[in-house]
Image 1 (cartoon, rainbow, N blue to C red):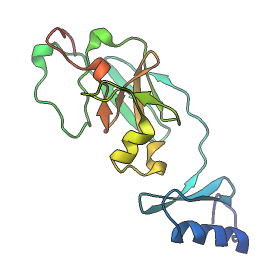
Image 2 (spheres, rainbow, N blue to C red):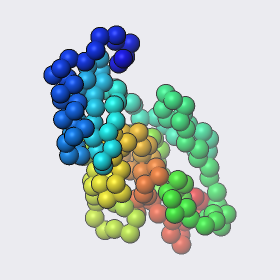
Image 3 (cartoon, one colour):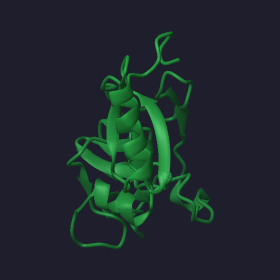
Image 4 (cartoon, helix red, strand yellow):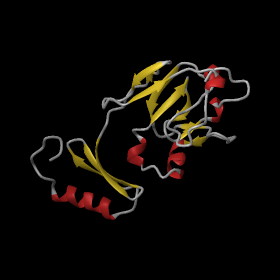
Amino acid sequence: KLGGRSAGLSSDTLGRALSVIDGKSGGKAPLGAGYYIEKSGGKVAILKEESRRPAVELKVPGKTKIAPDGALLKATVRPREAVGGFDATNRSAFLDMHKMKNIRVRFWKPGDKMRPLGMTGRRLLSDIFIDKRIPEFERRSIPLVLSGNKIAWIAGVAISDDFKITKDTEKV
């Protein structure tokens, strides 16, 4: 049952779904009632189409609810000296507070770019996600922390070189 629908899938819809399952990564097909099936990174998922979520202001310091499921981001401000070891998993980001302006959170959209830590040029987030083997259907749920219109942090994935901590950083 999809979205409360008691009617089964048509043979055409079922055929398209099986083609996605048996096909290469990148396949996607509608199932009806706002649902679709997608294959990415060797994984198959049945998902509900989501409406675009608007950007929300990040409370600094504070906790900000970023998704209807209750997911939140916690932000704190610390002096540079109080920052310990860096988190290699990218579940936390240490960013130069002086460089952060109009801090907001939103989710990925095709065409987004950033300058990953240690790089000189900008890269498409879709390319970063491919490098990290993140399936396309998971990309839409990864929060992006923005400073103005620039992506400062792809939560759990990478921080931007534009907002890294330097010897001149006072607050993180």
